[in-house]
Image (cartoon, rainbow, N blue to C red; front, side, top):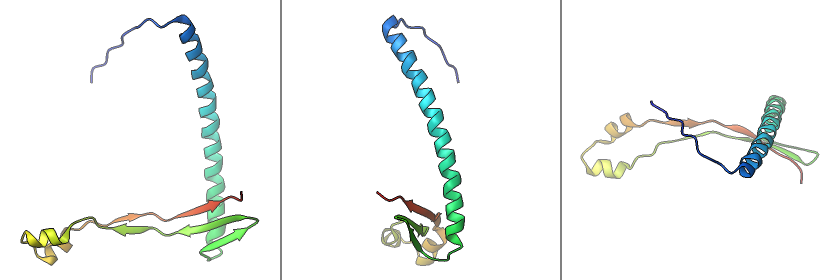
Amino acid sequence: MITQDIEVAIDPQIKAKLQIRLANYKIAKEAADRANETLDICKKDVELMFESTGEPTVTIDGYTITRVAGSSRATIDEKKLLRQGLTFSQIEAAKVYRESAGYVKITAPK
């Protein structure tokens, strides 16, 4: 891949405002990344403790923790393939099932 840098003239006032806004963006992005890391750690801890209850849903102090089950699906128009001459067993053999991972949903009180 070939890249080429082209310098363009930007109004100095716009450039100064842009530099300030980009610096603010960097600070906010770093803070958001740290917050997301903390949320991920908390969520994993909550999920482990929740799983040990064996319950599908738990409500504590207004928080609701729910196990959302994963699912699988195949997307194919079987009737169309049968009309085109494929047998049912050929269609079944060609299916690819994709699992959708389950997850734990945590809802905070409002």
